[in-house]
Image 1 (cartoon, rainbow, N blue to C red):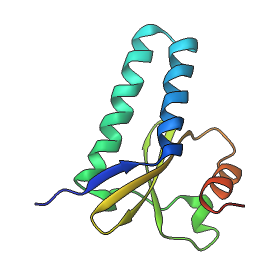
Image 2: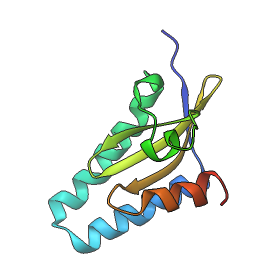
Image 3: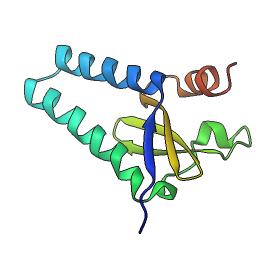
Length: 109
């Protein structure tokens, strides 16, 4: 079985850096070490089965089905599959105002 290529956009890379920095500053050291590893595994797992993600409910409400998401609670990994490449466009804490974040990041609104 041929694997897909997983690419992080500059925004998604920045999201991960901010999450890791926040967790390292505000959480227990063991948790801070575990979160980046689990998020990375979640993201790299998209290379095997990118279609396993669900449509983000905020985008589905707008009739958009080109993005999917997978979770490492409370984090949401939003991505798009084009050809054999998975583009991770956003990694965010799902407790944030996701409607606004998604519209700003993905729709340029």
